[in-house]
Image 1: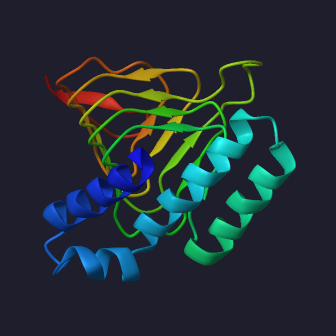
Image 2: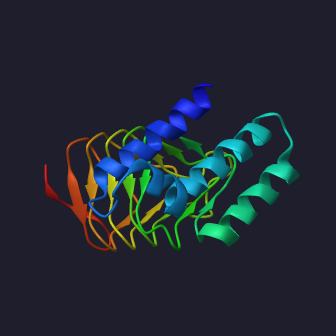
Amino acid sequence: MRTFFELYEDAKNICRKDPAATNVLSVILLYPGFHVLIFHKIAHFLYKIHLFFIARMISQFARFITGIEIHPGAKIGRRLFIDHGMGIVIGETAIIGDDCTIYHQVTLGGTGKEKKKRHPTIKNNVMIGCGSRVLGNITIGNNVKIGANAVVLKNVESDTTVVGIPAYIVKS
């Protein structure tokens, strides 16, 4: 029952954050950013019980349907809003906190240098602008805003705005 409540909470959150969303039912029926969360919850459960092949199969099906690729090992908090999700990639060891917003063409990826934890940890209430790349075993603090097309390769302190390639602080 908790998963159903969480999904409904996700749909309400999308409806609240997206001015184009007219009601919760339209979000449930029409939003690929919501659909991928359903697939991910199933795939992540299977991944945790070591049914890796089936979990990956579900995540790849979700990618085919939505254009959003979330590895089943990724840990996603509550009320994630994926807006215009096409081209989003979230790696296996990525962790996303609560109340985050991710726009299209974002990558939460690895650098190829790490062996165990390879992907970023995103804390709560983070907004990641379209086209951004957040790479490596780094931590993005609470209430951070990452500008469009930024490339983030180092930790970002809470309550900060970063932009650019490589990302630099514009507001703290």
